[in-house]
Image (cartoon, helix red, strand yellow):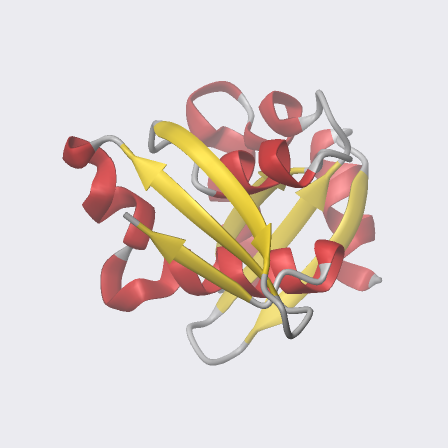
Length: 134
């Protein structure tokens, strides 16, 4: 709650959720649709300020009601070609995400941290059990 209040007071963006990932020293904010630019600030100024105040990396994801759009938002700025969500016979949901070949490294992230973020958020919001990046 403290981090959400900090984000809102510094940026004016409305946070829907805040995840503190101590494993990689980051805070992930899920902001309401349309507030991502406000949260980031001009040339990333708000992100830089929040990073200094918290001593953690700050990541912003724009929320969407539609799971396909939400998953696309988690990979920004990587260009996503397609997201297919299927349900297996055992009831588990899988999302297969196709990204532009030049953006695959950005989508996965250093040591897979961007892919991990997407898997965590997809599970948390839409009960998607696995995300595959192609």
